[in-house]
Length: 432
Image (cartoon, rainbow, N blue to C red; front, side, top):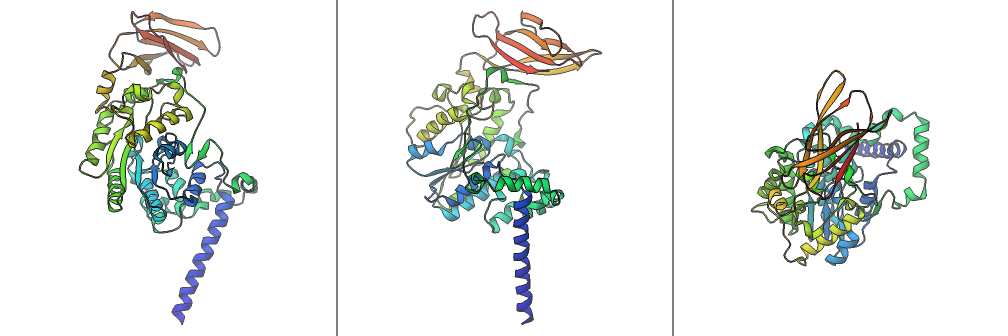
């Protein structure tokens, strides 16, 4: 009898703690602008069987629109992408989807900025919490939280209110959150912030050529670009799909050519992914290496250098579904970056402008063009100081070095074109 009482006491205690945790979560955690909250609600309440599941980071949820893929696949598709989604979260969502649905196909988006993560070095588990906060309670959720990073983060994963424990007596904070959560839009999970349903997030914002500039060249990709942690979960995803007879494909969503061309070692990543999927039932396709004429994505198809907007996502979603439906005959996807750009016309895609040194009163810079093919370039440089008049630093010339007064602020404009050509003049604009 004593053992039964002790057991009942433990259960009552746990239920009480769970109730308190949920109350404090409601009072202290502001998720009124969470896109993942909307996605996870639909993920669990989807009435139709999810036949085809998309997983991955923001590259995924901004690239594949289920309204289009449903129509072409003639199946129910769902986009379970989330910001900075790690392979561990992708695996957890795959398992969750498999509990409630008869999955036929799974497409996992892969981005090298995600695969390099070493989980024991994660200092911020926000990307994990985006998913775990809305998962059903169970062993799958526990495993995700406990394997996501150092043990010092466990408490924040299980006791959500602890993240804002300092606000527990802040009535202004609590009142503001309650006012947001009482709104019909929040309570009814109404679409907001570009969310268009079934996980897809669109945007009418588009980038322009003046944004195609970097302040430094990105760190070169090496064979370590796919960490042991990411390899482990890629293999777990493959094994899960093999056991459950699910067709699996890993893919990389299209980014602007500027990203691919400016990233040294890009082909190392694609080679590593092909090695991981060789001799398995899965495959890997990099749509950044697709023949340019097929989708012909332009600046106006991108939200920023890494993400498609609604217009670009419509193009890619249609192409993607038709490709896997075997409706795109003769499509060329190159084996390497070099092969793709060898078949393109010579063009300058953007610029890298790096600070190279400092003098007593000047900052020195060097321009490096990002080219599809090696060609001589020429530049015209002007500045618009916050205080003072417009100044031309350089008329059209192949010179790539210039200097700006230290401490001065304003807008730098660099026009560029192929040397000796009457072709297109492009330009970048950046603050200095």
